[in-house]
Length: 494
Image 1 (tube, one colour):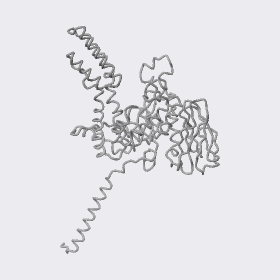
Image 2 (image 1 turned 180 degrees about the vertical axis):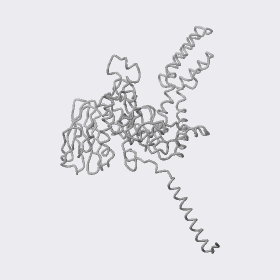
Image 3 (image 1 turned 45 degrees about the vertical axis):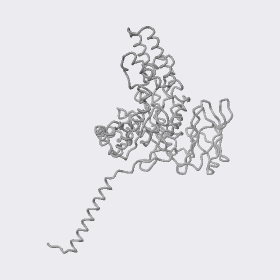
Image 4 (image 1 turned 135 degrees about the horizontal axis):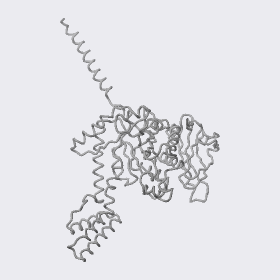
């Protein structure tokens, strides 16, 4: 049939419109979802709602243990492949997967390696997070430390002593140089120490067995690695912009270096395991107590400005990791955290800005142990409290003033406070970061709380707000949650 020109024109326009619509619809359907965003307090938005992330590095082999994690408030577990994402998804949890993104400028093999991992998992509904290499910045330094500060000096002395051609006088001069190099290393003068050692190896006619193991080279090495990881993150996001990119650090390194590494990620934090207090050296701050958790949370926030802070806390005892503490005569040496310590560390991280808490080391502990029971207990408690944690900020935070006491406590050393509104209710958390008990007065509470009772959750007590204030006390390392409703208490365990 021969069509008239006007009719052909109409049909052509119609077909063009249908084709355009199909292309547009295909683009809409295939477009990636909106990238994850974070709540004002650093909590991840999932389906538009701020959520507290509670994670576990261990993916239990037993399905019943995995179910137990989910039932006790945990919602994130580390996985290594799509099949494991299937496992956690069956329990309503998410998975995070590790990915080495360090990428050279011209690195097709590296791009292929990254793409294979991403493409295998990126469309799985249970994938939530890509984690970059653990403690990448610290390992730039740490891998060389034993050699740079101890072993190379012993190796030089041994080489000097075995030199049969050198005179006694030459040996003494060289040993003096070793002493000078060691002194420079003790004083942190890495370039001077390295230069002296280079001179000695040359005099001995022996090649330096570890020429790259110099701490003076580490700043440049760390900068180069940060650049390679940033390049890899750019490539990661070109393949998948829908998931969080997270980087965990050691409790070490400068703010400037942390900022370089964190520039390309969405969330950053560190692991900190201070129990037993002051003896394990995991914190190198002046604060080696439980409150070092909050101190490092603040430090990580400074090292990742504008980013979410995710903290890794202690799910083990140091005795569980090596034989040294196991054989120590003091039963407290290397012991596992107790309930009040586990609880304090979790709240200390949250009260200093953490939006996620993840536990490392549970693979070393028994699943009928007190510590595992405590981790399940804190999971239930925090999940029940979640609406109050992610709630709306007040116009101004209340103030806590400490009473006079026997300790080195001044009025401004009252508990740290955090007040949030959840629907029609209010939740106030008070955290005592001191090793002594403290009595205190909370003031400047919102006017609408006037005359109301605030339940002390976890107890049968309440405090009464009068003249926008109340008086209470906390034990050492104590945490108290107050609320206008008991709905924020965890349900009794079945």
